[in-house]
Image (cartoon, rainbow, N blue to C red):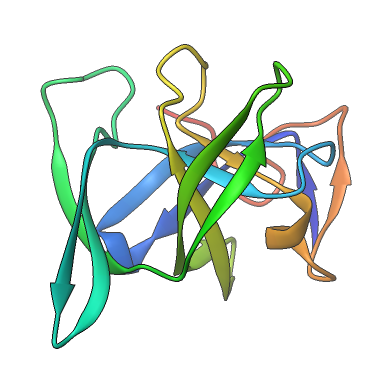
Length: 141
């Protein structure tokens, strides 16, 4: 599947649909902007609960999501700073395909897009045409 530098995806496990994402082959990991991350245990296993603003144009809209905690990693951000981030595994739907990806949870409030789609999430499933946008999904209305 050939995708553009900006696409729209669904993260159905988190209750998020029509989320615009920035495709970044320079980033190893994918990251999602979240607020109010809280760690807790469910059935003895670590989980995280967090808030997501799925509509970048309406910050009043908030979805609370919960996911099992897969890992905690040191991630080097685009400005070169290293930070500890929670990692979750969730389903990504792009076009007519879906597959599991790992997402780091972070504050991307200073970025244009709430999600960065990195190389590990792409795997061998996509090729990127950086000169195009919305090749497999429709642009916003």
